[in-house]
Length: 186
Image 1 (cartoon, rainbow, N blue to C red):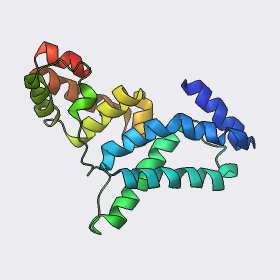
Image 2 (image 1 turned 120 degrees about the vertical axis):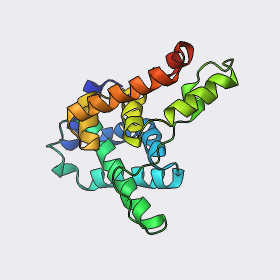
Image 3 (image 1 turned 135 degrees about the vertical axis):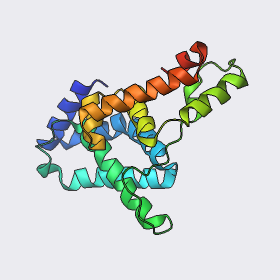
């Protein structure tokens, strides 16, 4: 669903048309789940966090009129819920915003199953050269189609930092990968 359609659904919802609640959930669930799995790789935490986000927007729907970008709002909310859950359930230790252990699964990047194992290994090594924020920026931009402005809001960093992370990530991948493997990533 296009971002403009999301905005219209959201507006209808916060204005009192509760029949669109299910549509909002269905249109965002897949993207939120994929993002959540990149952040913590625990489907129970991700599903519970998504459920918490949607319970919150149901209970506080009248207070959400100020939300201009439901896409950003939901992703930021999910990110915060996951941090809270991980802090609570994972070894009771504090995890800072930037301490996500994002791992790109090679299967997600490799579309063509006939690609040699060498290329998979090369790609995996190159992605692990990236910082966690570079991985997160790449994931949000390329896998969730988010703009730099949306990523800026989700990660609470300025747009120039988003650009810098993207530039450094692409530069690192370009230098680490041969052209054929690089085409699989970007």
